[in-house]
Length: 113
Image (cartoon, rainbow, N blue to C red; front, side, top):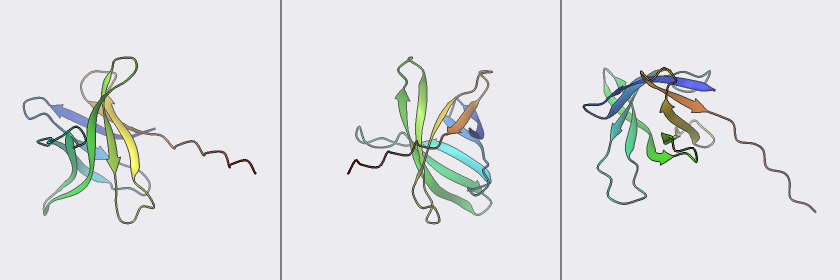
């Protein structure tokens, strides 16, 4: 399910766009590159963009799919959420931007008694 549409600004290596769901933030969001210090550090910080400054919403890491396609693995979090939201930011099919895709994790089977 697509929950966001973004434009990639190559000169600054940033993504800007909107996230829209029924309960999650509805507004302008930016993926801003970080100065990664080690392999576990995120490559981007995800921030809301507003008139009163920015608020950090999550982080993103560069990944490559088994098919060789590059994407960002995204984790969004908020105190009101029961757990972080995992998503993927990947190039849109038209090649002009990127889309944020979320899918519900499959429920795990109950352990056998």
